[in-house]
Image 1 (cartoon, rainbow, N blue to C red):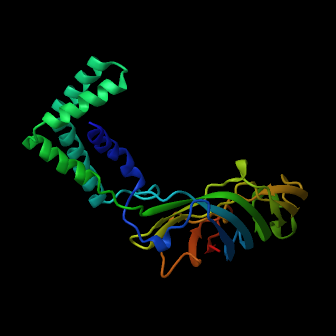
Image 2: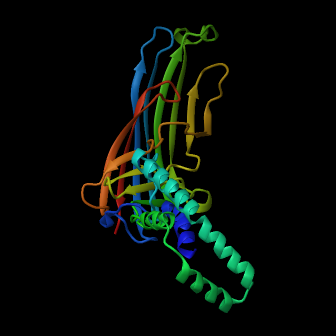
Image 3: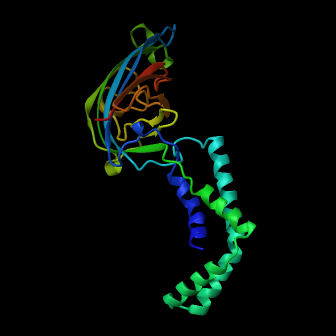
Length: 308
């Protein structure tokens, strides 16, 4: 009976085992440093007879995050299960059900012994020994033994998830916008045009994310020798000081605070090949941005993973 119960319990352990290439799997609690540098640049102009504009936008941010290795597992958390894995899991589930069904007569006999002996361990031990000596190895029991043996062959771990546990970030903003318009409200202005200039300057350190953890993760596949990474992101408002010079009738010039609404976005989850090991991996991604003011630009994301 005990062996059959162990066989059933094997199904639970399937979620913490898999094939392994141990050189890419490290001890739980190992830490890595993930550095992300984001730069956004947009320079251009809009040539228009009545509403010309020009802009020069530079935004940058640096994030340094610490990721911590979790216990290696059989199944991935950041990627969809493979067809072969699902087929193997279904096969093991069917084998466990088969073994349980074949062992039911024996389990029923064991229950009778428990009912007879109650909590008397000596009685239970004696009755089980007698039962084993008199038991015949039926085809069902022999087949159940093979099922149990099959379920006992559990592979080693294959995946390892690393979670972000801390983050530091800084940023720099330097932007300039200039425009004019031939709006009817500007008819009394020189040249019948209203003019506007805006400068945005900002820099500083950002507070850590709530809970000081962040959203970053990466997951190593030791069999395919690659990883899926979610890069850390700016988790606090990025502000700047705005200086406006304008002769528009409905706009007051002067200083004010503004908030960056785009152009410093991290990339989507990336899949990265691991050439040798996790000691140092790096990459560059470029993301097209529309721009809050209508200008198009490119965010360049450079990232590095360093494991001591």
